[in-house]
Image 1: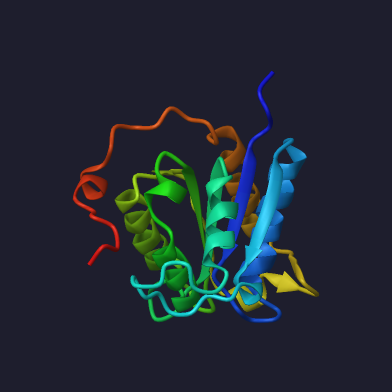
Image 2: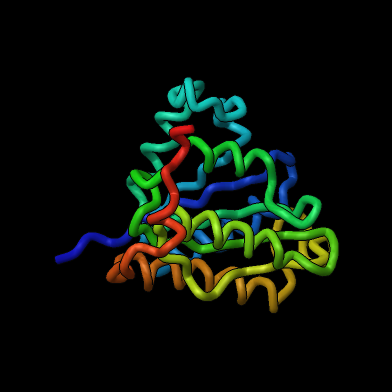
Length: 193
């Protein structure tokens, strides 16, 4: 009998009342409903200085990387900041590499105050491909977030469905046969520079 998949979500928001965190919790709840074990890595609780390739073990980097490495699927969640993903998520991803992401299923979620949260998803898709992860075709975007959440819950039905589907796909595709290495990953030397 195969063990149930393990789904890890990485929250790229430091806000106390983060919409991104609430949406990730909704995705993980769906993954748990389908039998997966889950882990939310809340970057508010992780000591990660800006990445310096001379100190790859700074702060809580090793512990965070181990939690990601255990995952069959990883959901990357970010607010949309200036048309891209957050700096705290960038710092966390900089500490990671092929050991954490190669042949791992990755789901993408972006929450925006405005109407267009798609560009951060495109940027994260490129990062995941450079690490030879398998990116779930379905992504979850929650535009105009202030209208979609109430009292710490995602209440907009359309957004709830998209986010739950991301949690579902994270379980369904957790152990998908990986594709051959992407050209992006074969040209990525990692952070050795």
